[in-house]
Image 1 (spheres, rainbow, N blue to C red):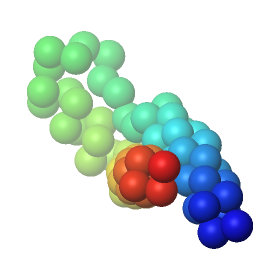
Image 2: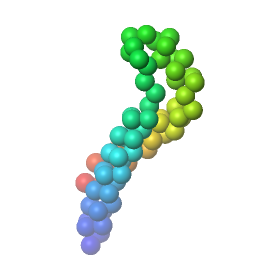
Image 3: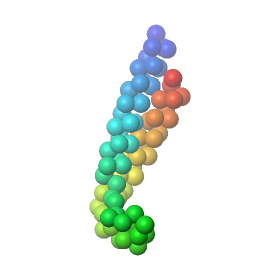
Image 4: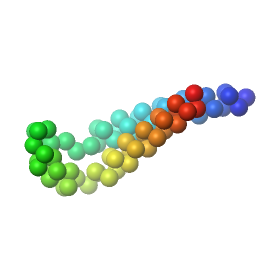
Length: 71
C-alpha cells in the first residue's frame, strides 16, 4: 500500500511540476531582440511578474525532482 501511495504522489508531483514550469516559462519576460542584453535587463526590471515566474519555475523543478525520487 505504501508503494502505491508513493507512486501516486510521484506522478501527481510530475504533473504539477511540469505545469508550473511551463506556466513560469510562459510568464517569463522576453525581449524583442534576444542578443540585446541591455533591452532584456530593462524589460526584466520593469516586469512585475519577474519574481513570480522564477518561483514558479523553481517549485516546478523541485516537484519534478521529487517525482524522480518517488519513482
